[in-house]
Image 1 (spheres, one colour):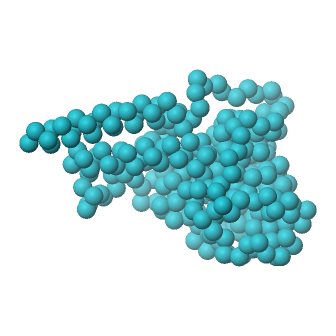
Image 2 (tube, rainbow, N blue to C red; image 1 turned 90 degrees about the vertical axis):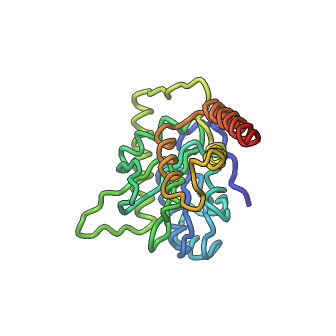
Length: 259
């Protein structure tokens, strides 16, 4: 099943916030997440290759949030889950070899809430035992970390989702009270699938230029991903970049043909 396409306009911006659970092992945790989401006014649940779902334990833990389980999207890969999203946030509990933009849940809510009226935003949570892989985290624009006590940092999946979505709901209530207006832009931000195609095109071009050695790529593409994730391109900027890459490839190939 493919990830559902969510409209970029919705009466309630929170309905454009998608909670994505990656390779969840225990069905009860999926139910707990559904309950946490419904408490905070979120509806869009996506499961990436869950070990055991659907399952009656998920329904027991969901209580009155079974409707979220019934409407949940199940996909095979994280790429499918976030393809139509304009912003992807990954939960991270530990430092990485290459640092990525990292915020706490409150700052995270402030950053992502203005975009909910424009496109779906994914909040990605990893496996119960080891979280998200480095590769999965590199697919995210931003990382969020819950600053739990150093004496005991472990949170179960339902608790983690509750904390992050609570801050998002508080930001929503604040916007309603203050009459905040969403920042306008002359075009939409690029979707994840569009940016992924740009990364593929960029890597191919760098190989054609012999700037990137595919046999020894080191951390080049990872660092370029981090750069563009900080920049947040819109769809026209992605088209412009791909046009530049196409022209570059043509120029390189002409030079090679003359040799």
